[in-house]
Every structure is written in structure tokens, then in C-alpha cells.
Image (cartoon, protein in one colour):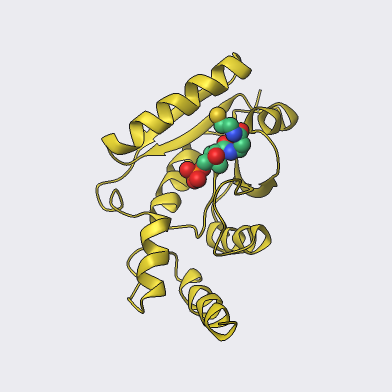
Length: 165
Ligand code: PNS
């Protein structure tokens, strides 16, 4: 039996923190599906297609990892893909409340699905997509925080937004 897990998130954009969790998750399971979720509350910087594409390029070469879009509930996606484990990264105590609540609600919706938390590496525990967007938006250097392929795409996207006024 193959060990199979899903790593869901917004990935707007993927960061080196996400990459650390992907690499470590991939080493624990035979297959890891990185699931790019539809942003319900928040308006994204990148479209879902763009986020998937950025992830595709970032995970190239990591064995057993695939990237998919997830449009509905996580529990439904997990059922459809026949995984039983969901991986989430935990950076700090501040993440805990939200993650604990989400894991509990998901468990209620699907008691067979387990959420597995990986604490982030010390070198990436301070990185968030939100701050990456803010820094890039104000002209700061985001190369220490995101995979190399994401840097020019961020610049391109922000230039496009600026040109649209
Ligand atoms: O990277 P994020 O924004 O912290 O990821 C949150 C995500 C995508 C994992 C969460 O919002 C999610 O699972 N969305 C799918 C819809 C869903 O199942 N919502 C109910 C969660 S209890």
C-alpha cells in the first residue's frame, strides 16, 4: 500500500517555508499532492493557475510530488484523491489556534482523515506569503524568502498591477 498525503494551502506565492515542508513531507510519503486552494475570503495576488505553475517549477526534481488545484472542501479533495493524511506546517504559536480549529473541523467532517503537523525549520519559520507580497509590493528584495523562479514572476505581476492603476 502506498503512503499518500495532501499538502494544501493558498501558496500565494510559494515560499521557501512551503518548500521545506514539501521536501520533508515528500520524504515521509510515497506520494505527496500539493493542493492549491481557491481563495475564498482573500483576493489573491496570483491566479490559481499561476500559483500552480509557480509550484510546478519549484517542485520539479523532488520525487513523488505533484501539484493540483483544489476547488472545494479539503475533505472532499482528500476523499477523491484517496489520501488519508493532510500535512500542514506550523511556524509559531500564532499558527496553532487556526490550525487546531481547522484540523478539528476537518476531523468532524471526515474522521478517517488525519492532519499531520510538521514544525517549520528554524531557517524558514519567519517566512509568510503575506509578508513576501508586502515586501515585494514595496520594492524590497524577496530572494531570501522564495524559490528563485518566483522572484521575476512577482516583479512581473506587481508591474502589471501598477500599470493597470
Ligand atoms: O495557506 P493557507 O491559506 O493557510 O491554507 C488554508 C487552506 C487552503 C488549507 C484552507 O483554507 C482549506 O482547507 N481550504 C479549502 C476549503 C475547506 O475545506 N475549508 C474548510 C476548512 S476547515
